[in-house]
View 1 (cartoon, rainbow, N blue to C red):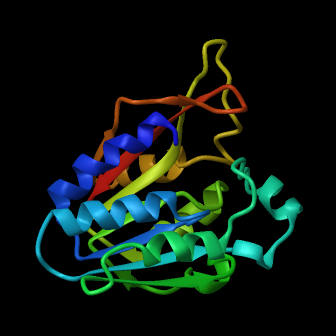
View 2 (view 1 turned 60 degrees about the horizontal axis):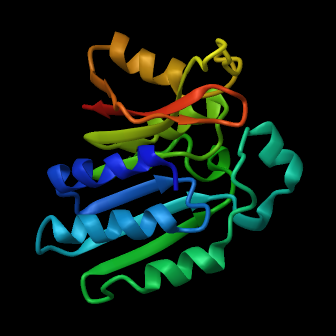
Length: 193
């Protein structure tokens, strides 16, 4: 996994979430870690809800959504999460495009990680559907060494995170960055409500 994700452990230990939401489960690697960190932060039961398209879409969707990690795998994600303490941890998945399965709803949670569809409108709709005090956005882009950036009007969390900042929310860009295939750097942006 990229180095920027290592920073999530401290965020989760500090937030002590009982309910986690992840947009973009992929293969469950981060979900597994987030669950373990949340369980280590207190003695309560933790629930996790993961949203992903899994095998409901083809390669064209992933190309249009700027998803560069390959196809998600629900079976692998289920296996990883089933290894977490079953007496204190429960999980479920909502399968499909979040524009249909999430947008327009209001889902309460304690901690959310948003790393699904990388199109601005999808990210905006994902975030708007979450009633959560701590939201971590992946793929806030910083210019690469030669100024490389994707079209920020179309891709990345920048516009959405900047809208939260303009609305007076606390926003923090975490320091670790990773170089993306398109040449820009990706960092995590934390929005606290």
